[in-house]
Image (cartoon, rainbow, N blue to C red; front, side):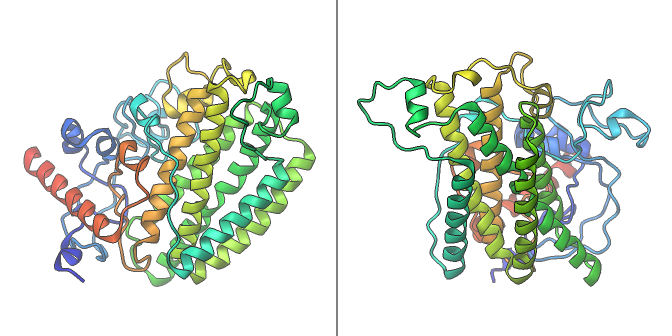
Length: 386
């Protein structure tokens, strides 16, 4: 193991999303909005600075999570003020999310690419083929075919739908709703198991729990968004109940056995999610899904992703695809790390979508370098704040 690997971690704390609020915000032009929006109040002293280090004497953060580019700073007056429990300015509370999630620029949401990582190791191949099996079953249940449309086709939208080439809006909603009810499970299960491990072994988690919880909440908010477009039937809810029960327990047991394989599985699953949403975007933009062409974005989506008041459903799907690309990137990165000893390289900041949308995760060496850069940024911020 390199000496840098043992000495390169963000000094202000690997185990949770902390930072120095004033220095982080002052450095926003230099570090980008992602670092600034993650900055929280912290007054602890540096301890161990390594990818494998554990902090044991860090002071508790006094800030709240959920800052975003367009939000005002959180109040220090506690949970009795609206802004202390919301990602919104202190005027009104409209949402129930408090964890960090990205807010994308127009350039970022168009930067996502459909990518697929080659499965090389035995565990990677197991994860990949499990995803392919899951995808086959999911396609069967949701009626998803998406056969290639003949190049010289002059078929109408109705003819394409009857021929199984494209889906109508009801089929797309069924697929998306079912997908999101399952997609919110892995992050919560992994976070729960790491939480229990931290309690049982009485040691720091190195920042993984927060990112995993953010993923779970983000997927849940996808579901809440699309639920505004359709109320599922009792039969559909029964399918979700059965699928969730089976998947939760299988993932729970699998994560105990091999966390790295599970993160690779999730990353491959997110590759499929990016592909699905990309196809949905293509259908809307090509006029093959006219019901959604000019549909206004749900208010919950405008709030959550800070969309323009005139945003439509296509803007929402672009944002959702960007989220899935983030999960793809993060889980491939996690699968490249040692889940028992390495810290979360995204504990303080994440790359923007120009990186996450075009790259299939960090290697362990790249994660090490990214952590070292975060360390240098924070040290520079401390020096500027004095």
